[in-house]
Length: 175
Length: 252
Image (cartoon, rainbow over all chains, first blue to last red; front, side, top):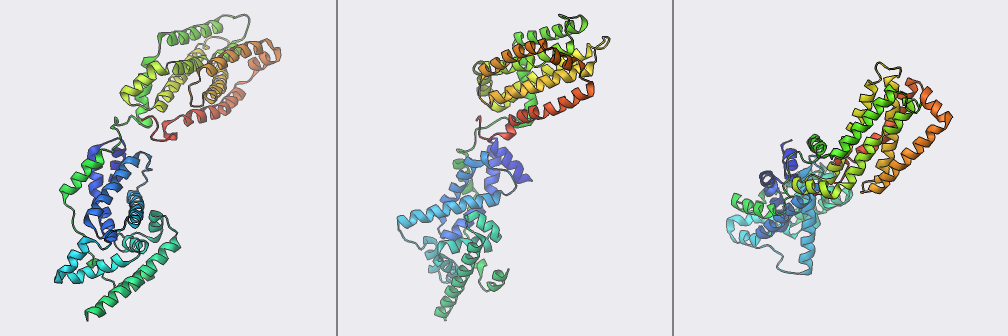
């Protein structure tokens, strides 16, 4: 209810309401990008991009109480564009932050999952992040990513299988 | 659900996300705020601000418009109290009934550049709201003239309700035609043409004895039924002009 009021105010150009709305969702969207890219600065840029797109398009947004889902669909598109850009402009894929984490012996164990996630195909990683970190339902993920329910289910299935395999392999390597 | 159970072994919680400082978010807010829609007055969009604009619009009417309404009223009273060319007011007044609404439409469209654009620029009202306000002012004036004439029937041999229903039927049909012709665009010429056609056709129709007799002899219940049916397309057309039925970006 409060969120709906904030959206209405943002539609009328209220800066304070916009700040409140951004603060409310910034970290969630940032976490989504970080879990997909493993790159702090890239995630910050993408998060900002999502909010710029959202605020620009807010006059046309139907205020139906599904703002988070709408933000995720914008985020998913931004992520897809980012993947496409990086595919055409290849650079170091493994994020700097992940390398830093793995360098510290204590953090190495925690970085295992990050590294394994980083090795997942982008679509599978995105589905896993939305499902297990942001608690979205299959239908909501499908809507946000523009895929069919069955496709999301299959991405999750193969993503999780691969994750389990990667984590298992790493554990064996550690032993 | 099956997938969740299957993957309880994967320690998802170990994927820590670095925290983002409040300063960083505030800096992002400054950047995002550049894309904020232009600030608008609260209530200036949608129907909540409409009443305010209708009042403003009523104050913007030219003296000529009020004079026309007063003239029509006076003419109507004269037609009721005295025999006018030996014609019944039941036939004459419906002919005159849509005139305040039509002349208001013409004024609304002719005045577009001088008044509406000025108000739109300064007050940031949408053009749809301003047009709707103008239409509502015209409708209110028309209804007031009709109601006043019906009241003047008291003490005469004429039936107020019947006169009101006949006049409203004419208003609704001609109003619907005018709203259809304007179709969201500024078409003062088409409304002027409609006004001329209505007056000429109405005057000619009064010369037809069958039509004249029908207008005079129509019973009140039938007139009420016809008015109700006529009101439907008129109000549908009017609602279609509501800002709620238009894209939100329009007029910004």
